[in-house]
Amino acid sequence: MKAIWNNTVIAESDHTEIVEGNHYFPRDSIKAEYFQSSDMESVCPWKGSATYEDVVVDGEVNKDAAWHYDDPKPRAENIREHVAFWRGVTIEE
Image (cartoon, rainbow, N blue to C red; front, side):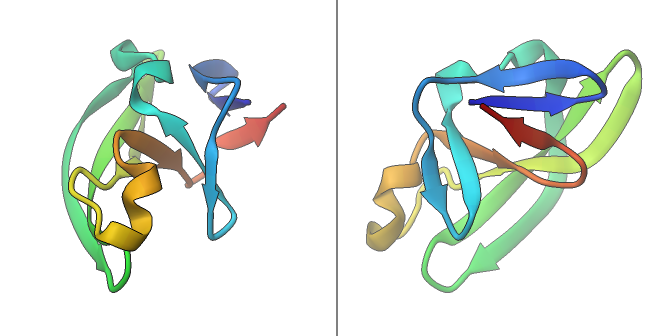
């Protein structure tokens, strides 16, 4: 699977975890040079607290386009150390 934004592959993995229709990529499969910290956070009742990151490609910023659960609740343990995407990031095989 590939996560693509602004015609650039920002993550690629042979295995993703699918939760609620979102592909969660292993943390080590994302290309760190395209990510920067964000102040955005949210809470899911069953997954826990999510932290967001901006995706930056060729100087263009996709604010809060990636998220992850650093300390997920037990039912979501399978997405620990995984990153998911939205806001125009496309997922392709």
